[in-house]
Length: 259
Image (cartoon, rainbow, N blue to C red; front, side):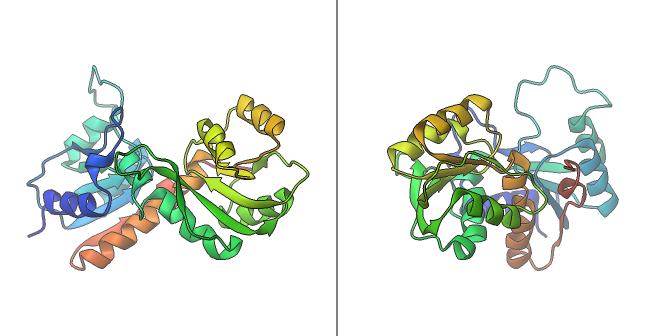
């Protein structure tokens, strides 16, 4: 019999929870570590609709990237997502910054998606937040490309997501990327002599600063850069636990839409 703890232990091997940043809340957030798990659903966010989808699939565990509880919770009412999880007996494991840091996590997935299309070279860490030098985001050399050409390729990689970018009049030979919201790492990318930073959730002031620095800055959306986590994590789990029914949430792939 597989338990929630067994799944947790495997995730802890490939995306160690001890590596998460101090302000984060990754790990087993809701549920019973000793509960049997015969089915799992992966997703980016545990929304109310995602919980209903998991319940309809008959799974006992949801694995998400974003924590279902982040800020302190003062009430748990029948309308809340946490209440729904408890009512249905569904546990929730959340892999947030530990997945951002892990080689096989969000930024590792991004590297694999881009490496052939952009001919990426060897990786070095963009933001080394851990004592061992590991951290969030990567820096790579790439085949020489213009900002406009790179934006077009990113539109192919992150299908269906709008791409906003600055386009200085110079070729890109070295780039940095950070899934989710990495606009705050603009200075690190510039200090590493990168010609471009690829991320999501970019605030206007970051675009202004990138323009002033002559650095191409690409916003592929927070959702777009991290939604691949759901499919890839489901793939890892299917390969490890053949006896499990593993699903990647259908709801999670479509609840944020663009025209």
